[in-house]
Length: 243
Length: 301
Image (cartoon, rainbow over all chains, first blue to last red; front, side, top):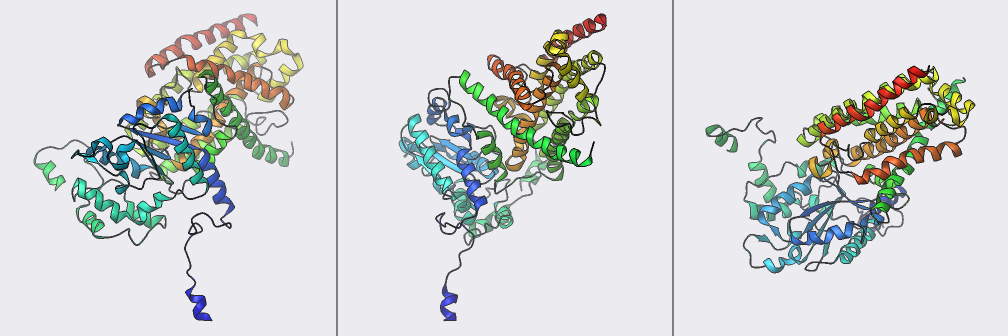
């Protein structure tokens, strides 16, 4: 009898049941309710899909009536909107931006290019699947999707958030080694960002079995202190710092 | 006055200011949306924004001074609300006067400068220097308006100013007895609320919302709360000085909303001044009008 009781799996956290647990806290429900109704967008619009967002925001489709409004910096934003193709160089900036956002944070990939590379499939410098490098909550496919499609996609994300199922941002902490490995494959083994994801995972109780691994070991090996020199340094001094 | 009444007022007045401020922010956003032929945000949108920001699970702080700065901003405005009499509640307004209120209204800007300093973001530093330049600009006409009001009513006590205007009827309201000063006051209110063309320090497309550049989660939430207080304070102060305050909330609130509707509605017409240009404009026009009004008041007496 006691053995059977021990075999009952104990799942950590109130959201382990995928948001279907009826006994979730009232406060969490209220938070999710508000999160779903107030979304601040950060546009990372280097691709052509950006052209469909102004009509979605202005008088024709008016996203503000759904509680969605644009914001200027990653710190303030909830949604990172990646529109169009992502070049290898662009992805570095996307990673920096994504890691600066305060969680819960959501990523939306707009246009076919973020889904599978789209018409840049054969390009050597373009990232094919965005979700290999950071967790993507929603893809809005199309070349380019109409503002209606963008708004429907955002509404689906809202439903997901309100049900407490939009938690892919936690995946970035729990499987950091996987994402970092993919990033290192592109940017080289010395790749690092100013945000210490491992420390954040420890601090916020998001540590998972996939947080540490061979890639994070490589990161720790090459990691440099974040303090930058106050004045630009060149020549031998620069080489010393970079080393 | 009984100490329990004061305690009740001091707790309830900031809460009332917050709720009215939420409605004012809603009016601001809806006005803008309607003028752009949009529908605008839902009724509870300002509240959803604030609750969502406080409910962020990862809060990014840049250190102790960053935290302290935001506490100073929010705390400064909560103190301001305690000194601002509203119908049925006086709070600390009898202990401190208009001068104390003017002094307290500068505390949030300084707290913001303190907090943003530690973020070490260049955009934030530019933003805060512009915010202080803007404050340097509007404080001169603002102080002139305050001096004029004190000279006109013969007192600096806000409850007494309200009582004088309520006893004298509409003819004794500030807007009738010193219309030139009221004009300077409404322009100063516009500058104080940092609406275009004076939103030099917010400037989302230029310096990425200036002081708010590194603010996320509860820090941004604090600033959203402060926005409600800021709008409310500007509206209530103008109503108190020029529109006779109010005996009941039913004749007080329409005045506050009407006063603020003007800056909210005309702001959409303008682009943005440069920080220096804005400063010169404020020192030229509202200050000039206020000096003229002051001269008129002293010649009348």
